[in-house]
Amino acid sequence: MVKTNRQKFGYWGEGVAGEYLIKKGYIILDRNVRTPYGEIDLIAQEANVKSSGLLIFVEVKTRKTNTYGFPEDAITAQKREHMISSAEFYLQEHANFSGDWRIDVISIRKVKESKSLEIIHFENAVSE
Picture (cartoon, one colour):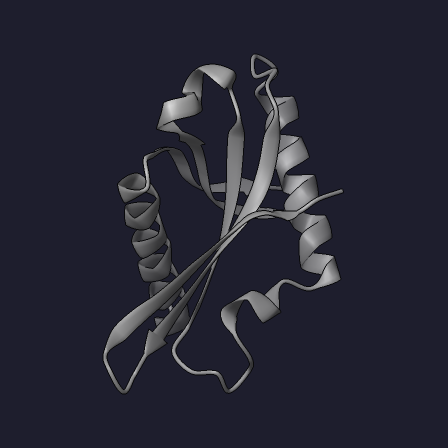
């Protein structure tokens, strides 16, 4: 399948988010998990609390400009519902998991003027 520039940019952002989480002490368990409700970008656990079993579903939003708002502005009510349904589906499919879970959002903005990245991690950003 041929990826569009937008898809390539999105995958790039997911890679940046994965590296960010690893540097912050997270373990990436899975990437780009497809469910009937949408795709889960990253699934992770915090390395220092892995024994507690907290599973973290991560939605990554990446933007080059603020023309359409900040990346996190793309998390609409419908997107929230899809994220929750996707996480619940994943948990049903992985019945061996019995711990707590949360949904985080990572916002990545490529600042054109300085060629730098602005990364904001919203923990527990989406709840039922």
